[in-house]
Image (cartoon, rainbow, N blue to C red; front, side):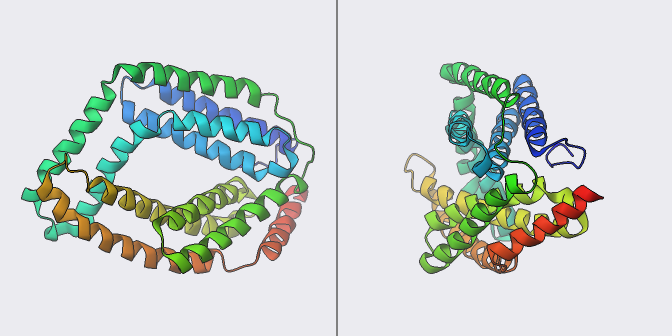
Length: 296
């Protein structure tokens, strides 16, 4: 229930505040656990910033402070993006290694993984990181203070209909652009649009769980596939760094491209299903489910 509107919410505005305060509280709790697992704490807190941006996008047309709050959440998460990227590249290495299985040249790639681990360890020991973490935490605390006073100009399904339509329409448009260009940048833009639609489906999942849960699952799978695709694109850029062990870089460069191709095929198959419907019918259908849910 924490990241979904509830029939017990007195209004959409009340639900907005409840969800935002819950996510910010969880993000701050994660930051409190930095001494236990710094990398997981940073990952979780940044993930909650993204969920909050999905939340404010849902009510965007009815939320006067949308632009300021979206920018504040974006900038807060960006403080730690470079640090998070060190872990993301290690995770990408491991996912690619798992995909290759027995085809992985372990002797050639082991020194590369060690080098990536060393980079992450040095980033964690950077004296400036303490200041960055403190600034990020302050950003979260400031956002929590503001979120308690957020207000909307509309209520009911009217407060969310415009956000659903805008995000879903952008996801469909981004998929068409990615299909036409095949560029990694366009695939990444599609992923961002899909992820926001996934958040919106999650936030409204209680309007009819039996129907919405399947939609949420497909959006989740598509978001994961596109996220892995983006990470591999960034990984291939990293593999061109001459300061990293050459044997490992050469051994993984083409397999990374092959895995990207596989993910592209999977993503477009999922996207064709998830985004088959036009925006107006989808919003109208969800609106009817909302009304039934509220009247139950």
